[in-house]
Length: 68
Image (cartoon, rainbow, N blue to C red; front, side, top):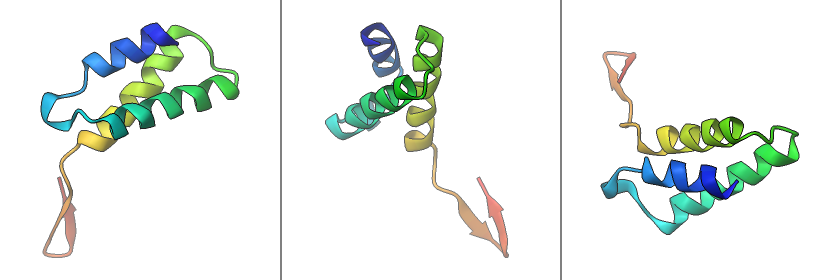
């Protein structure tokens, strides 16, 4: 789990790096382990998903349609 956490934390862009984001990643890894997914790959995928969700640009509405 520690190796996966280190791997994911290295993927965090510098402008988004914070203790709160790292805590969210760690919480997600723990949640992943409690559901029975305990391989390094499972942990890495769960952590990367958190990073992607927290660092993606906000969506904007454009004439009633959602745009990225």
